[in-house]
Length: 211
Ligand SMILES: [Cu+2]
Image: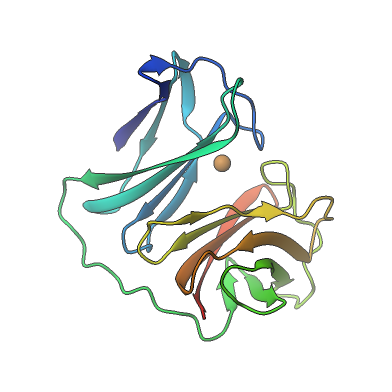
């Protein structure tokens, strides 16, 4: 385990007060440089602008960290940093574009569709459709996760860009979950959709090529 400690400051002065945003004071996304490892955690607030959490990194190498938070007297922000874990590196995996946007996770089939047409610089909707693999029935008992139908994270292939994604409001509990985002430029992006069912959060990754 490695302890991650975040110091949130403004001109070297700690920021003390944060607003709850999607049920948490701070959201931390950790991805490996090759995008094979993904974690979404909620560090504990220790006061004085310091947040702390332990994380089990799978191997050495570079990791991208993004902290999402909202100071009480400011606006929502995402702060990004590269860190390096000094340990034996694993062989980086290639980021392979998915030919079919259909994945299987923990007995659930998840299909991703993009509307109207995958294109850079345009507001698009990402729609996840969930089916129970055992019964072949649509999943309609998703539970709210962080105050919405799910949570979606998108990074560019090089880990440099972290996209703002938001859930369309007032959605039910499946089988469809719809989010909005804009891909800033053409290229390869990895998308992680996170949903909760039966008290368990599951994560489904997709890799797409934006023309
Ligand atoms: Cu979070």
